[in-house]
Image 1 (cartoon, helix red, strand yellow):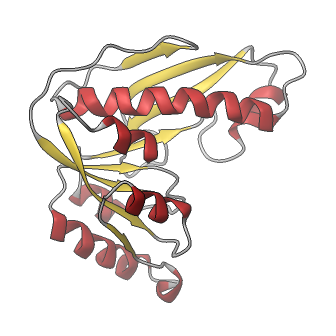
Image 2: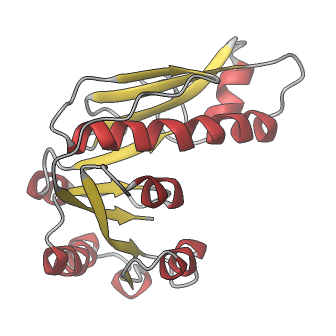
Length: 201
């Protein structure tokens, strides 16, 4: 979330309008305030067992700021088809694997256990099928001999902080062609138009 917000300056085609969290103590809320971005909380716990009502509360906060794009960033709740349909074509997510490999959790441990020589991350559109929307970008990093899941996760996180802003910049400019990065390679900046984004952290 911080990488996205920091990138949305100058000639960037988007501006952050809201950081919305389901965790009242999320560190991203404090960071949002430090970055002068509006923030809000919709705690999922009072809605336990009723995802529809929880998502109605999320939607109410989102509609109030009218985002053109919603960027999921560490948002660990599965969204219902009703929510994804409402915002279809406007929700992005980043996943810590080279999809379609390793959807779901424990991606780094699974890649190491499989003997893969590379890992990475994927930015994709969110659809009603988990981690299966159209790919908008991927960044690849090597898996080194002796890597643990924690070491690999840190390497992939660095790539995430490069990839997600690059994809958002292109997507907000109306270009859905994928961005592909390898470790240490940064993209060129996109051209400017004008839109807004909501970042769910």
